[in-house]
Length: 281
Image (cartoon, rainbow, N blue to C red; front, side):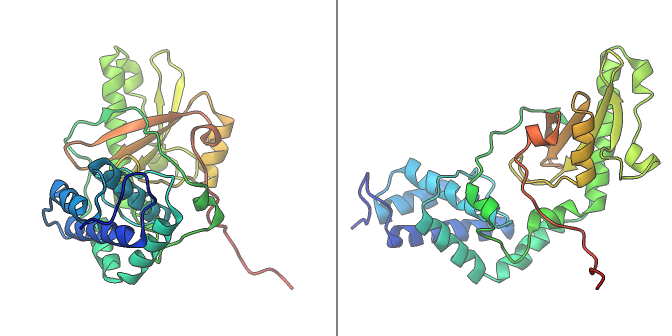
């Protein structure tokens, strides 16, 4: 006997079974074990009487809540907003109760460092990412902010920058601007990382292209961080500012998308940390 009926709100029992199935698959993914999404979906259809599409969407809702929490999620379920509040609360409770997932996620984030890869760095269009207003209200925070942990990995960031330098040189060379290709500079190394960008390259007309590189091994929907200097410089040079978001780095499917102009215009920015020292009495 199934629990669900088409057109009715999801019950607590349906939500619990759906979350249980999702977390079982997430655990398998983190442990590097194979799992079958279709089989899991079919089993849920039998248990709760929901359509395959409805179950798929609910799993994407779960990914959305986990992303809000700064947690890893199943990349095959693209985060989708419009989350039922009962589902959000249940996902948060389930994530917080699974302490051992933290160590599994850290193991994934702490995978052996890699340098520039031989895989082709292909350009794709930027994703359309659904953002819930809940994330701007301090609604949900996990114990560990995994996007921040990965973003602090300097070796990964450097490898992405070096791959971008090579990509820019090849791009200009292919466009018949060998003279400009020779002038591409990795300024975060030569001049320091406080300029607000990592690489000075050029457009084919000779104008400057200031590139900030953000690299992840995760999917293209994975969040990234921008510094105050990067935000400031993007405001000062909106015409020539480019953010290259490298994703699935080190994977044969690695690629990047580009955001141009002021980061205030190209991104949804969430206030984060403050630099602080004790106030004098």
